[in-house]
Amino acid sequence: MEIPVLEYILKFIAGGSIVVLVSYLAEKGNAVLAGILLAAPITTVISSCIVGNESGRNALIGTIKSDILFLPLMFVYLIPLYLLLKKMHLNVNVSIVLALVIWTIMSFAFFRVRGIFGL
Image (cartoon, helix red, strand yellow):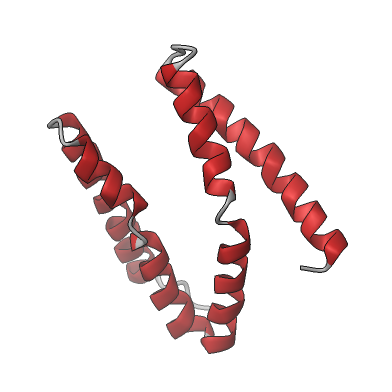
């Protein structure tokens, strides 16, 4: 099996470019634009192109269904992160880790419930 190294490098550069751009905008005081860029479905568009072209239409449809089901979990990360930073005044890295822990626990719980109800 051949490993498409160049393809992986291009995907890595595309994803990294978004992170760098968001960081740059936030640094320059344009938090609104950085937030819009983060909220934009850029990674979803890129992932859709890759999955659709490499794995086919049915794989993409399955991925979309999962994305729709798990979309509310984004709030499970963002709301605690906001509260940890704004209300509890915790360190940025500590807040991110704690929000990720909360998200991970809730994601596993949601995944389990989803399986129980056959969603």
